[in-house]
Image (tube, rainbow, N blue to C red; front, side, top):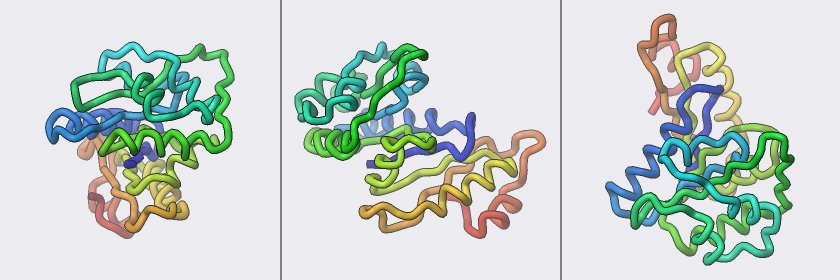
Length: 195
């Protein structure tokens, strides 16, 4: 499980997640699922021109029903090795994420897929935190701004999950944007090199 998280809105995390999943599934020919847990405003399915169903919402509401077959049926194929697991619920709906839903969903997906690429925003929702904790690798996407530096430092400082043995990968997107910080300024502020 790799999670891709934007340090701030509009940093390009969803685009990075979609392209990473595309690379693993279609270029590297590895069984890959792109997971977009944002069931109201997620964009992963939209970027791949897929009409999401309600399978993800059902799985998150009733994790006891999750098995490899449900996970596979709920995921929409993009090719023979890339699937997208997303939903598009009404904005007025209040999604319910049952406790333990993330771990049961990950267990089912791991039986079927080599890679799970999650487009996981950092918002105060237990499901998202559970996914970030379950990841083997976190990827943080930032843009060249002071706000992104601040939030990248905060995200990099989150406690590592039990499966994480290395620091998050930091992706600097849109370098050279007018008015943006330079790479050196960003690396000096982060006290590390960007990946």
